Length: 580
Image 1 (spheres, rainbow, N blue to C red):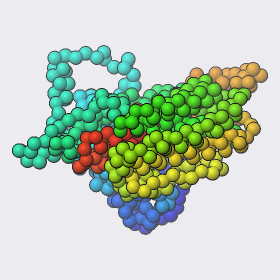
Image 2 (image 1 turned 135 degrees about the vertical axis):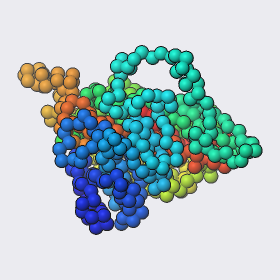
Image 3 (image 1 turned 180 degrees about the vertical axis):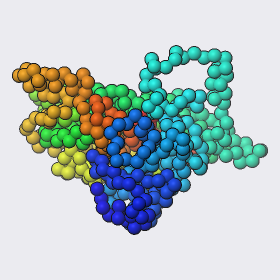
Image 4 (image 1 turned 60 degrees about the vertical axis):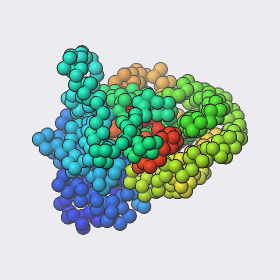
C-alpha cells in the first residue's frame, strides 16, 4: 500500500478521518464517513500532490449477507469510489458505509462529469440516492421495473419470480412510461415558441451497432442536444457472477465485449488468481498474451471495416472480414472455438498449444502487415473519409480524463498511456512495442490509433512466436481449475479434487481484488469480492464502453446528424460491453 497518500490524507483530514482496509490487490482502500466523502474526493483530484485525475469506477455492494468482514465498519450497503492517478501511476479506493435507513450520498457530478451514469447505475441496481444529481433515474432497467436487481434479496432467475402478466393497469403504466418528455431526459426547452425537432436515432438503427437509442434535439439538422438511452442489452452479467462458480463464470465474460473473445477472460481469471495466490507459469502467460493480441486484431478489424462502412465506404469491410476470419482460424486451431473461446482458466489456459500452431501464426504475421498498408491507401488516405472525420467529435486530454475515457479514445488526444506499459501484467514488460498516439482527438485520430495498434499487436505476437517458453500450461496449485487432468488417473484423491473443482468450483479465500487490462476498447477491470466460498459474493465489471457513450452529447452538440454517425463509428463500442 502506498504510504504517501495516507500520510497526506492524515495531515489534511486527521488520522481519525478514515479507516484503512487491507485488500488482495494492494490498492490503498479507505473507509470514509459519508459527510466527508466529497471533501476527500475533491482533495484527491484537485489538491493532492500528483492527484487522482480520473474516476475509474463507481459501484456499490450489498453487504447484508457477507460473513467474512471482520474489522470493517458496520455497513448494509457500501459505495465504492475507484480513482486513478496517471502521475503517480497508482489507484485508490474510497468506501462509504451506509445503513438501511439512510441510503443516500451527495452527488459528485460536479467533480467528475462521468459520475452521472455511474450514480444512476448505483441507484438503479441498489436503490441508493445521490442528492443533487441532475437527472437521477433508471439507466439499465426499464422505468417501470420494481426493485433493485443487485440487492441480495432480489431474484437472480426468472423462475424465482411471479409469471409475467400484463393487466390493463400495467399496460397503461407501460404505455405512459413510453411517452417522451424532453425535460425528463435532461433536455431544456428554449422558450415556448422554440421550433425544435425531437428525433430518435435507434434503438434499431444500423449505425447504433446494437440495440441503442439516442434522443436528438434538433434545430433543422443541427444537433442541439443528444441524450443516449442504454440498457436494452442488459442481461444481468454481474448478477450472474453471484450464482455461478468461479470456474463456470468464465464463459459469461466472453459475452461482455463479445468482439474481444478471451481478452474478457484475462482480467477475471487474474483477479481470481490474485485472491487465490496462484502464480501462473511463464508458458501460460505468453500464450495468454498471444491470444489476447489476436483478439485485439479481430476486434479492431471489425471496427475498421464498420467505421468506413458507416461513413459510406462499402468495400473495405469485405476485405477486412477475410483477415478477421484468418484470425479466427488460428483461434479455432488453438482453442477449438472462434469468437467466444473461453480459453483462459484459473491458473493458466484450457489446453496447451497444438502441433503446428507456430506455422499458422508465422504465415499470418508474414501476410497481414501488407494488408494494413493496402487499407491505409483504401480508407485513411481517402479524401472523403478525411473530410467526414477530421475535426469532428473533438475532445482534449483533460476532457477525456474527466469523462473517464481510456484506451484508444484517450490516446487519440496525444496522451501516451497504455496499461500494458504503465502496469505490465502477464509479462508484457518483456515485449518491445510502441504506444500509438495521435494529436487532435477527433474521429479520424481515434481510427488511426487503432490501426497502428494492430501493427504493434503483430509485433507482440511475433515475439510470442519466437520466444515461446517450454513448461506447463497450468499452475501446479490446488485451486487451479480444472487441475491437470493427467494426474486424475494416478490416485483417487486427485480425481476427487478434479471433480469438485469443476462441479462445485474452487473455494477462494475471502478478500477483494480488482485487476485491470488494456482491452480492445480501453481499460476493462473485474473487481471481485470473495466471502470464502465457491462463488463470487460480488462481481463488478468495469467496462470501457460505458463511460465512452456518456461523452456523446459533448462530442456532437452543434454538429450535423451525419457527423453523429461518424462519431458513433469512431467510439468503437459494443452494447453488451455497455449494458452488461
